[in-house]
Image (cartoon, rainbow, N blue to C red; front, top):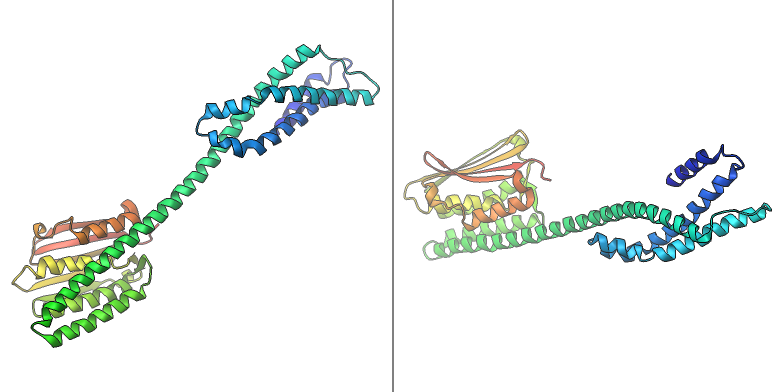
Length: 336
């Protein structure tokens, strides 16, 4: 389009001039366009080698301008050879200024247009490089997030297993049948957790199955000291949640509520969809906010996982209640 515009301007300037035929402006500008285009093709082929200097624009420009003497010389020689050749074929002589003036004039014009095109090319190359680096950065961030999630899950599973085995170990000394029953339930829980595979997200219904198995183990340990109430809205069951996210939150309710209280403790698990969010609450009586630190391993692990998966779109907070503490979790129904 640029060359068509240049040729059109040349034709408009000379079409009515006395003694100039219509094909002459076309030859003059067309020969310049042809040779300049050939040099542009050469520049594009050399571009990958010079793109290492894109981070330093002036150095990139200088590397290209270093060739301008060669470009100008070959440009003038090639363009005027074409013009002289065409005129010779028509039996005429191509008249022009002296060679010194021609070289200076054409070189100045070529440097001007080369600067224009180098600016355009630099912008396009810089944008392409920025886009490539952005894609590489996003890929790297994704791999890093996946690695961090795997590390957090790896921290969570031994932590949970260690606490559960401690519970069973304490029962082995006083009640072997109950300890055996707990081992069976632990096996069921581990089998169910393995079925989730390497998935980062699972449906709330699947997550609640694991949570129920864990709750059964803890209720067996604290028989007669705790009651659990489940209030799950039907439309919330298919919402996606990070796998094994709720278990450490329920574990905190047993640790800070049931273990530290001599009175019967109630634990309530509720879940509902509110607009485009899933709200999950695990509340327990028998403790205060000071008994449930917000920087414990379980809470910290959950917050880090939520940050990696949802960014700022998820919330997890501990709030006081009249008879205890509640952990309130808000997740987007559709993670990014």
